[in-house]
Image (cartoon, rainbow, N blue to C red; front, side):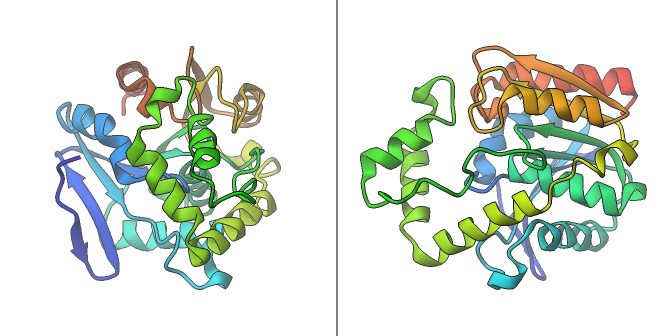
Length: 254
């Protein structure tokens, strides 16, 4: 993504376009570039796309948790003086968006989750006992997608670097525990924010029944499936993902 990263105060973020603000929340091992297609499409279609760099690895261990990241998001929204934002999150990013929406529903116009944690996640921070073995890490990265070719060398290298950095690995494990601790099953039925759930039918990290459960528990949600798609729909099927979301925005008048 050939975008300029803005640095203001404690925040680093990308901002493109004008119009209804969409704040994109990346996942645990997901870079800002994972949302290149989303950024390009929606910034060209009347939306302001903002992607803050979440402090996944820079907070103290005690503050490396979903609640703390949701507070960071709230501070960012206040800093940018935004109201009625759309939150779009993948994996851990979806969980952060859900938790923020629970705490500050007045700030959120709509929520979009894809492959989100919050109810269940399969070993989000586990399985790295052979982390020095590049081929093992490559296989794990490929398993995130339906089509293993989506896991480019650049993506594999980034995951390999992360799990072989002791500080980052400790933080990754802390986040995984926090995601399990912050299970939102009891909160979701009280959350009336319009929610678009877009899920890969072949997601092995947060399997399809997780999407069904989100849809059943959230009172104002719509669920859309993408076939032959793993955990990161906006990367694996960007055009389909964008069209589903754009159509939903039109139906919901967002």
